Amino acid sequence: MSLPAIATTEVLIAGAGPTGLVLACDLARRGIACRVVERESRSFPGSRGSGLQPRTLEVFDDLGVIDAIRAAGGPVQRLQSWDGTTRVAEWDTAERSEPSPHVPYGEMWMLPQWRTVEILQARLEELGGSVEFDCELTGFAQDADGVTARLRGPDGTGSAVRAGYLVAADGGRSTVRKALGVGFPVTDILTDPTLIADVLIDGFDRAHWHVWPTAPGGRVALRPLEGADLFQLLAHFGGAGPDFTPDATPEAVQQLLVERTGHEDVRVHEVRWSSVLRIKAGAADRFRVGRVLLAGDAAHIHSPTGGQGLNTSIQDAYNLGWKLGAALRGASDALLDTYEAERRPVAQQVLALTTQVFEQDRVDTDRGFSRRGGETLQLGLGYRESPLTRECREGLAGDALRAGDRAPDAPCGPIRLFDLFRGPHATLLAFGGTDAPASERYQRVRVGRPGEPADVIDVDGHAHQAYGDRGLFLVRPDGYVAFATEDPADLASYEVHWQGPARGPSPHPHPRRADVTTRTAASVRAEPLDQAPDDDDRGEGEEGPHPPVEGAVAGAAVVAAGVVVVAM
Image (cartoon, rainbow, N blue to C red):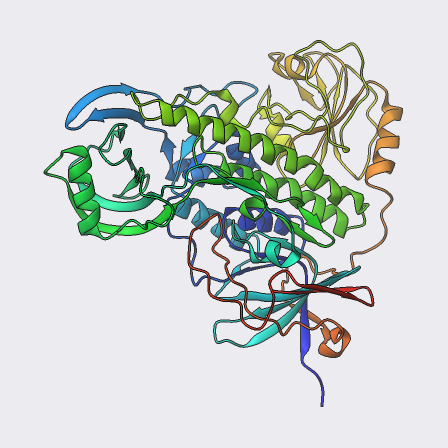
């Protein structure tokens, strides 16, 4: 009797929140076969992470979804602070900034998370991918060549899949992280609960973000949501304690608003979605264990203040996508080690920033929210200390662009540098007539002033202002300057060191098919996967109950004959 076949894919992604979807889109456009499995029966339904920072908008530009994001969302509303039924002040919580030659998206853009997820999922489908809902990752085993995972489908039927890599994008309570035994030290920022809910209400205008900083029982805020007739409610329960769970029924929410705001005429017709925030901050000790990688809330959680969590998670995926693509096509495995080397320090910076902003909000009883500065836009984050970064120039001015920095945009006649960067490739910019060798590893673009021979003409000088008069700048696929020099010989040694020679076709040569069957059950008998179900896969930090793990010890690992078997 023949044994059942095992499906194969190049990357298996657990979790279909913004992190998993951005990664899947990036892999799909690179011709990397991937499967996205999501335990829940549908996409995330809430508004939770609704602030999209300018750097994230640049990522969405590159992925081909910026037009949909811009059409569906809107700028952050002005805040209206209240004392009961009395309007106190109206002000901007975020810096207003017009687009500039180097920064095409100047300020935060607001869009409910559920709509962002819809747009990303539609883009994935355009690229030939899909999300497998009601599909639960129940166990996995990794060896030197890949990961074998056990899945449970909607009807309870089990199946196995062999992948080159597994990426955990399954939220703050990541079962993959727990199964790996990776440490995740967490600090309780605030133990009292905060209710977050999407509510259909009457009684408040939709032109403002309303906040009652000194409401009895705790701060309350109502923000009108883009593309829906709903408001996002935030209600803090000061002194309630960590074990208190707020009542989120329409009747209870209406009573809460009447008592805390004094507006007797408010009417709550529906609570479309709700959750409870217990604000914590922490980062995983490791972001990579062999062929398993952690991304998004599975790798770090933050206070929601400052609008950093979802954005940081999307940057994780954007950093990881091109590296996985390169590794699967013959690049050095050391390239994947730079994911943790680059993203974990960023996560720690964001932890510090969000905690700082939270404390500022807590003491600002006049306005309810402190003013957000430029540090929250994520445009200044970079990788100067990364092992991937090489700056070969000397004597640079203090404010000069350096290797490791975000590569600025600039108009060059009818085209922009971001137009040239868009896509899965790296780009070599050559300024000042610097010799730019051709290579299959990047797209070469010679930038000249009017009258100079070049591929693009910097008509107004904005590109030279950003990059300098002379030099070579290798811009990574994720939009950061990896390498800068004035000597082309430096480039050759950099390429060999980090990318290595091409090593022939991928062992998974199926660009967009996620379920190509090439192995049989007999070939992975040494990797038992009949483990217990995972205990949580909510995605993007969503709170929720934890079903018990049956018949397995979470985090248990057995190493035998070169195979790591993890029980989940």
